[in-house]
Image (cartoon, rainbow, N blue to C red; front, side, top):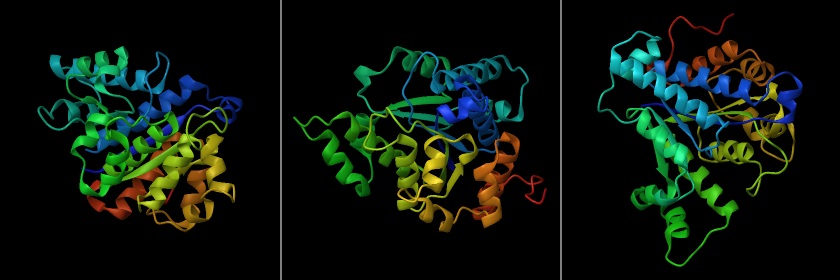
Length: 272
């Protein structure tokens, strides 16, 4: 199953052009609906807050679960999810805590989703990771060793990057100050995607850390523009500049189809 990692957070640039946090959440839900409808898995690494993106994702998962239970209609994506009884979760949220520290909202959301959403504590997940993550696992779960917040977030982002197998990373927005890690989270996830050969899609039109990463010479812009994600240079530039979410989805879907035709969306060509 192709996995789509969505790295997003509101930023001042996006707010200035009319995309406040609620609008950003709506964009994330639209992307999630689209990729789930195409039999892909969507992965997040976000904290839980009452007004945050994971709250919006959880509300969407709850609606899908309720409609599936009652046999109600809905989008093709909802029917696709509803028919996946017993399959692996289609939405995954990895959090940098132990299960005992899970946010109440996360626990309730997982329960209410009917199995569509799974919240995974990183410490628990690393107990069963492949050998290529041994270094991350050793640093994280070694007895009597406490990581700081920045190191926890880096371990989380490395693990999510390895879950994109096969898969890709989409970045949008992202704060450029006041972040808790060693660097802005969106930037770190973009950089890790490039380092591990994962297709990367930068939605730079909304500004923030995503745009800074794609055009600020000290970050990873040269690596991004020379990397392969199934798009031509012209399409990659259009994706980086546009704020048209439907065009963005069309471009990313076309890139995925170019890399792996099985996951493409026929009829959504890139010629227009």
